[in-house]
Structures are given as structure tokens and as C-alpha cells.
Length: 99
Image (cartoon, rainbow, N blue to C red; front, side, top):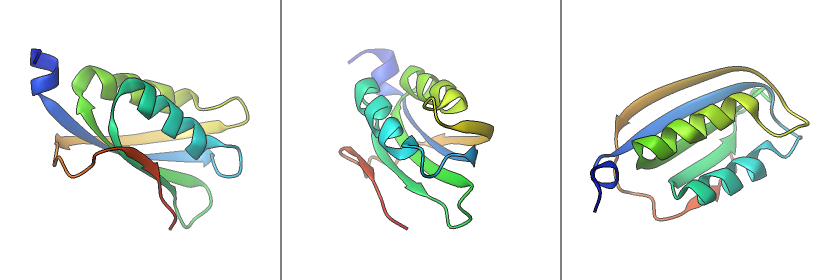
């Protein structure tokens, strides 16, 4: 196991803007799976935000957070608020959740 794999982290991010109804959650699932991270994505109740919880190597999480700032072509990202913490190890795949 490389040092990067041994130091798994968790990112809890809120993405604000035109992010619902534009395929953003599907897009996040595809990016997360390609990066090999686990966790979930779901719409927030306010209809202007989604929440992403992901765990994996630090470099993969950096790439995911960078991607969240861009989003899919139909989205408009106003802000990304992301916090880092230690990984919990509770996730085994990356899924889309409902509120």
C-alpha cells in the first residue's frame, strides 16, 4: 500500500449554485468512481445545493473537489465549501442518495 492509500481522508462538501436538475449528482458519481473514492452525493432541501461526502486518498479527494468547482456543462457553481477530516471507513462504494 502506498503512503497516499494509507492516509485516507474524508471530505464533506456543499456545492451551491445551479446544481439541481442538471445531472450534477450523476456526474459526481461518475467522477468519484473514476477516482476510486467512496461515499455519497445528494440534493440539499434548498434546491440550490448538493452535498458530497467522499473518502479516499488525499490526492483523489483533491481531484474531486477541483472537479466540483467546475461541475457538468449545464451547471453553474457559485461556491464549494469543503471540510477535511479523518476517514471513517464506513463507505464501500459511491452512491446517490435521496433526501
